[in-house]
Structure formats: C-alpha cells, structure tokens
Length: 196
Image (tube, rainbow, N blue to C red; front, side, top):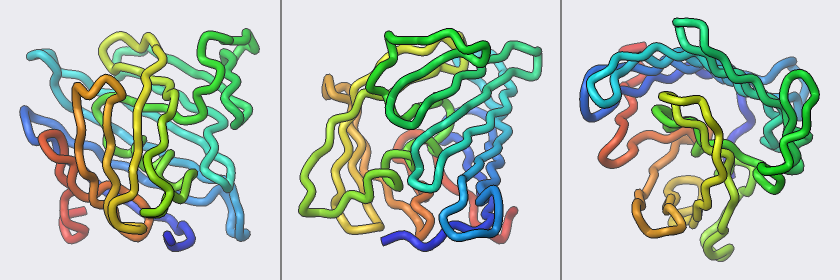
C-alpha cells in the first residue's frame, strides 16, 4: 500500500499562529526491513507562549515504536522506551505499567505521529474502524497520559479518518505515498517540496 521508506524530509506549518516543523525520516541502514528513525525540530506558540522542541522517534521495521526522546530548547527532556508491544519504561529501566497497551504515541504540535498507526496497521477500507490506546504527550507539560483514538481508512493508502474516542475531534487526513500527512484540517498544512 505504501512505498518502501527512503530518506525523506518534509515541513508543516500550523494553520493558526506562528511556527514550523522540519522532519527527516529514514531507514537506519540500507537493508530492506531496516528500523526507522524520525528526527524533527518544531517551533511554534501555544496559548501565546513560544516554544522550541526537538524530538526523535525510533521504530522497528513494522512501525512499532521502540524509543522516543523529546526535549525543549530550554533543556526539559522526556525519554521513554517500548518493547513494541505496548510495554513502556523510562530510559533508566523503570517500568511504566500505567501505559500498558499503548503501542503508538501522539506528540502534540506535530502531524507526524499520525503516520505511526497508519503505517503500522496498514488499514484498508474493508478493515472498519480500529480503536487504539495511545500514549499522548503534550508539548507544554511533557506529562504523558493515555488517550483513546480511532482510525478508519477511507481510501486505501490515501485518506484516513482520525477521531478522538469521546467524539470531541475528528479529521480526515490525506497522506502521501510514505503515509505522511499532507493536510491536517484546522491544524497543519504541509509545505510543498519545492520550499524545503
């Protein structure tokens, strides 16, 4: 459904306020089935306060998350590890059983993390709606919580519906051949490749 991943760089801008995200995603080595790394810098503003954040996400070849690090330009940092099956621990090895069952993450202020369940699940139109427990990390507090989200394929490899389980938000997300969001209604718009 999606093409094999090669090194790709994309940028998104928020539809409200100032900001920009610059993301590079690549296989960690040249072999087929290699692990995946995404690295990004996000600058923006939330509730009138400016922020700058870097993040790195590592996944195995099946798009199951194994590690992520987010840190502010001011030095605040969160680094968590996963076994890819929904069991989390701190970088120091302390188990975090409150997040058991969360295979994917959702980092606020980026559309990239929608790619993780879209690629991992490989949803097709006939699959129906999938409900997921997601490890959600807001950029203002870095305090993770469990969020329940739903994904539905509307057009194979091209369009996916994202919904909060409490029906507080929904968006239809067009994606490119890598599964990266092109347009996130009300929140983000991808910049054209010519501007990168």
